[in-house]
Image 1 (cartoon, rainbow, N blue to C red):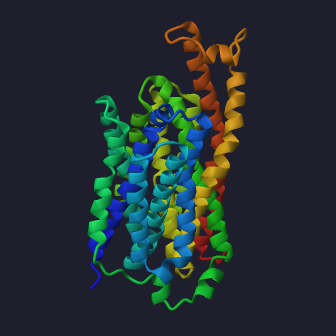
Image 2 (tube, one colour):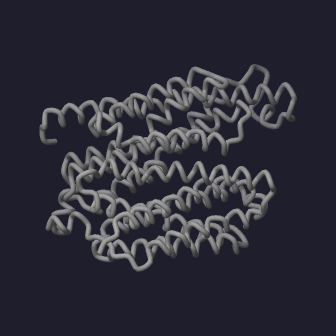
Image 3 (cartoon, one colour):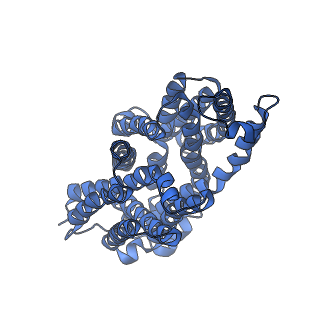
Length: 416
């Protein structure tokens, strides 16, 4: 007998662990750099290992979901998480940190690939709603993990103890999954062969949605990097800014079922693109605490992107099966790695363009706290971040056009 509620709840706890690894580990990067004498480049490589592991597991989990079974994917996730966390605690240098982070990233990816397939197979008549409800626990987990990280930092808890905090929820979801029977994917119950599943992933509509996933994921994940930099100038700890944005996303996803009763999936995607665009434009022009208002609008816009994109694909193209959902998730993560570096030279150019006369970049960077040069440097960083976000607004601007076309075609029921 398949215990639907317990499977769903266990997958939610697994997603919380994934969110914890983002929030708590992200807050420790600076500490790890000092403790292991790592350069900024090495710290970036360690952090990126989680994304590469995540992407790899998504692309592996999709094609092999039906062959290996969802239960084995969750077992791989549990092993990746528990071994990765233990090896992080025992790390002695760059390579041990890199490898342990890669394992944690693999665990994250297997949680996502297995859960998308399982949730869409268990709730065939309300996929977008249930995927949104499941995905509540990513921003909610970041809120919980972010607050934990902030408190642990305040009390000067050693970083190894902070990492060990994530072991308890990992054991929890492992115990919850133990002995449960897992459903077959919807693709199997529909009688769609592996060849048909692969062919379905080459249909124009699916390719169009993968293109849109590149942009929605970049709008959400890439621009968040600049928002944290921008809002940091108002004197609020970065980890609390992360909590603020993800708290709004949690509330939004918690009300997804209410919203989807009143607006179609494609209508919600279009509205999300519009709000994301308005939020980024606002962040490019307002300053001080008004930045939080613009960031709030942006957070409402991006909160529905990821789960609703996957919900639409699962509803409209169920024959793409676990492979389709993994391609969507993998495309979103890949776009983060590809598009994020594009904005770096834009940001650097804006720093130079907004530099006061008779000052150089190095002069202001090395200015002492509480000096006039330090205040000028904060202002330069703010202006550079704001102007960079105006460039980032191009992403949701393109999505507004794309989702308008998608919404119009769905209303007309015209095949793409």
